[in-house]
Amino acid sequence: MRLIVLERNQWRAAAIEINNEFTDIWAETLTNRKPSQGDIILGKVSSVLDGKNAAFISLGSGKPGLLNGEEFVLAQGKKTAGEPLPAVSECVQEGQAILVQVKHPGVDRKGPIVTELIKLTLDHLVYMPYAGYSAVSKQLTTNREELLQFADKYCIEQEGVIFRTSAGYIKEEALLAELQSHRKEWLRILEQSSSQRAPSMVKKNSGLEEEVSKLYPLHRVSSLAANSSEAVSSFFPLLSKNATLMELNEKKNKLDKLEDTILNMKKTIKMGKANLHIEETHALTAIDVDTGGVKLGTKNETHFEVNRLAVDEIAKQLRLRNISGLIVVDFLRVEKEEQQNLHALMKSKEETDKRLKVGGFTKLGLFEMQRKKSGLPLSRFV
Image 1 (cartoon, rainbow, N blue to C red):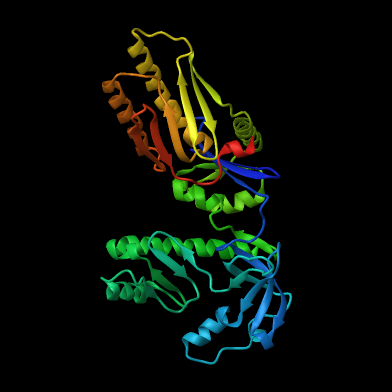
Image 2: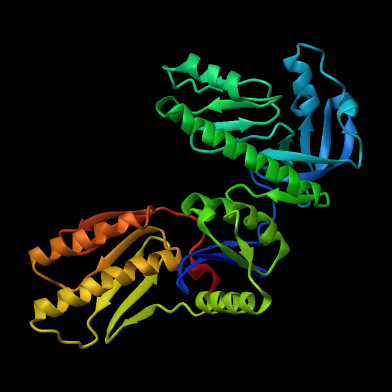
């Protein structure tokens, strides 16, 4: 199982390859460089304003971020200890590199608001490496004391966690595994930021790495091919401990193959003599199944066999093209019994594509599905 990451001036794509065939491709645009909420950035202090109890942080693009005095790690430590808050000039100096997270993106003429008190969020926990306290979601009315005892037991130094509502319904072992995963991610962020030059992006919120890791078990990937050092540094730590970087020739072949796949996506896919036509619009994706003149017995038998082939190809193309939203399929007309069989076949594809939700046939004979959005469809890049 291999991961291929291709970066161009306007976009970046990541693909999973199994048995020399791409199964999933994700892509993101690189044209929007402005910081967004949740981004972790190695900033540079541009000015310190003790009178306003704040500092301005250069983020590499757009307006400087405003870092208020109580949002410094040193200030949080003093607050937790019940001591007076320090002046901003005690926390940072002009020209200093500082790791911050965007709390609120810039609006109109105002720049972003940033914090040194970084938070990392997963399914059940919000991890706060410098908080000095822990809390439980207000929506969780049970097991509150047990969760706080868990935090006292396993949090170290200034660590703190916020238990999300779902944390009250899972075992301690699962919570501990998530906490350890947070720690590993935080150490990776610190290590990465130590080798970068300020100002620069360290972790893009909901960037390609995060999207792919949420949807695919990257720890199973054995090798990586990438054409940028940034992609190597951000993806490689997420892979198997025994993962390797591909040799130059193999890497070039895989990158060329991925680019050709993306740039040569066609609306019509051949299935022997039969055809599948995919039309993506803003409102929905329409897929039409066509026999192409093939005959396989009676008309009903022919239609069902072509439809059966189409089910496999549709499931493949949805993942390969990263199609999301409402999907409507115009299958070839078949009897009611065959419709039920097609529904069952399409329903089984949910097992391998967790983003897919199958509806069924409408009164007019169209087949409806939905697929959760993750990144941009490849049609945006061709």
